[in-house]
Image (cartoon, rainbow, N blue to C red; front, top):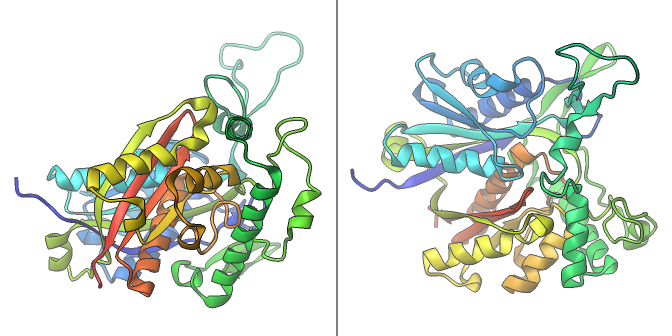
Length: 396
């Protein structure tokens, strides 16, 4: 089988909604359909030419959550003979959707795919686990499924507690984490003002009282926040700790999609490729300090591609916590002047199924608009993984 060049095109997302706010009454598949259609429209691609859809998601919600990929595929206009797949790899679920679509193409089982993901944590259900076979007398507890999503399965620590472990082990200070968080907020604000973020967002109508309104921008960024403001916030996860809501990623809702295709098939379908996938890596790390994940993932990716960190023009490293970004900066020697220039998880928010796709869209857009060559998208994953994906500009 001849080697295939895997390319990316399109790339659109919904605005991201703050937890419990504008998107809480919008079913997750509706968000996915909206992002998928916007992606197809941007690429001027007939959905009938898409043979596969991969959907990354951590927390299925609503009655159709377990079948979301197929629902989104057919309602976005793909033919009934096409196929669809849900994938989950914790905070890397969106990146995994892109990788899985690429693997399907490399193996000859697909030619043009939609890869995306999303979450609507605002719609995360409460469950009762002991009702099916009959309840006994006394108190019965409802369990928040978000708690399942945010707990390490080994220690049962919340993910924020694993970030505290990382800060303890490597000595990151509260002040430097708060300064990173403020930088993220300011960069997101600047990207909103410049229109950079608007070029990747498909506005969506959301319920409001008895009517609807058009939601056009991300709801979570707080670009006016100061280090002084953040210094007043109390630690969330540990008494005397350093991790606060201000230097952690935001809980947000949203969906994103990108086109993944064999280059020859893309060009035959009149799709203009934006970037190509060079390679990717997935590595395991100790779950108790899962935030260290981007460092070995990026190191392995650089080894596989024969590059050094300085050879890469731009990095998107998910700000699950500011400590994650500080750790990558320190151990990889990557300058913050070429990392997360348009905000990140702290300012825009982090719906795990969508994040990897959102970051890839940002990296694609950055490479095209700056005419730079290479970017890496990377993130840590709950339960102890790191992922990294390298892409290269085809428009230089």
